[in-house]
Image (tube, rainbow, N blue to C red; front, side, top):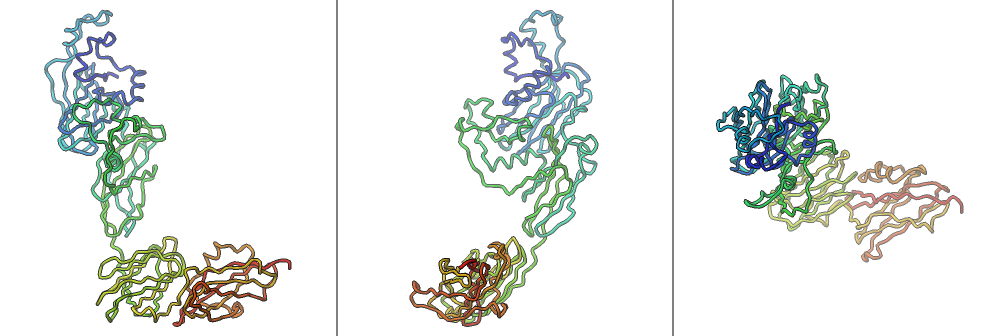
Length: 570
């Protein structure tokens, strides 16, 4: 290995004043490995290590230079530059070294002026240059000896980038190799899902190196490197403001300078972790709609929970688990299918409408009163789990709430107004509900309900053959019917919630389960309480009690079921 470490040009002039640094050192494996594990050794310096990827930062319009020395002719050389979040201009130049003096190996220090002349000559040759934001390479199977200078410049903005150089490119192979067809294919397209497939990396299939694939989804554009993705993500979190000119900062500050973390459970090499003691001000930026998912070694993946009729960009990156270095496939993009057009159901004033909604789906209803009105009232009865209701009047959102059980909403009216109601189902399963809209709330089919629809059982009044229960009523005279059903002793609240449909009326119950029906109301809400004793029960048996309140239009609403058990001994 003949790639040498060298410091910045200003350090070159300090060489004579260091007794231990009489000439540019050749690569010492033990020292080199120590330096590689301590990445801060390379931060804000011009040392370019052999066979390790280094992250660095560029200020806008301020060039940065790296140096390394190749001592022997015909040496293989590969240099890779990865821009992160801005295009770069970079060039690689060669300055030939002069022949070494005959004093080498004698153990005697060389004269200072002679040592300077040995380092570099005035002539330099440009080997390669590039401008853009692609990951670009310089590869040579036979490079001459000399001092190599890599100069980089960002003209758009402050940015960071990655550099990798090696004199053993054939054996290193840190970047995963792409297959002969590096494209990402869209194999399936839906309203909310897109399935992607790609050919596996030969690094995994042939070289048997550990490779994992990372999928990146966003709505803006494709990315050319994982470094660019991480830069975008770090811009969302805590990106540091660049130091002002003249501000003294150490290489350790770069750990707080917007560099993406490369740690992976302690296995990968990383920069120093950020600390608040440096006192730099952190600026938050708006969140970017971008997601990165690493999926192991699978080469097919379905992206879900996307928005219908929306264009997304998809990128796949093969990541070498050992080196944490990555290669980008040729990304793709796709637009999800449009959401199926919903048929809008018209609501009639004062009429109950039954609505069924598939899991995660929506239904649209329209209410257009024929006469002028001051108020409009919506009654919603969710039969199973909670549903979401949104009401818009002439396009303006008036209401957005979740409904569980029975709810009533009264909105201010407007002449010739039209109301659009969107009902969104539950994620757990299908939803069922009943809805009524009216401009005459005094004439409606839903019975009035108290705020608390629980049934209370009195434990002290419980016997071997009866239980006593109570429930609340309202100021409106309604009909109440109570039913009983014997259940197993292991019947629990979860079973009760799963099995019952709140919208099923008493007409579907067995006649043998009916206890009684009665009318009840009270002008004084404090006294709007009624009690009833359910008799004829068996000792030590469990029963499920239901109370139905039936409105003038015949529509019934069930109170919350109550599980009771008679005494075993009396």
